Image (cartoon, rainbow, N blue to C red; front, top):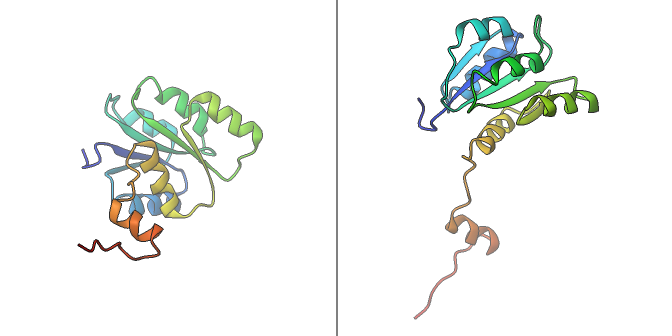
Length: 146
């Protein structure tokens, strides 16, 4: 288990996209990758541990929504992010009805996916007091004169 207390599971059929996501996210989190729904269901053992599934919508075999419906009972504490270049109103409604916690349209910047994961898992760093004072004070810290 990572310092964050969870792992990322990527299910993306495009090898280059899968590798890019893996290489980016493994800098901060433990990552497991699959290229299709079938291997994910066959290989990944059910778990009550917190996890984040990053699932592509358009894959051979089961699409991302069908996969989420199968994974849900096996991974009850997981968060689910659907990634797709095909989002429209209908797909967005289907994804939300299936229980996805977030929808990320392709293309996206890699830092945005990290930020989304951190938000879902409650890791979004809050601004510390010194940074807040610097930002609100135009970059200068106040000085106490006695």
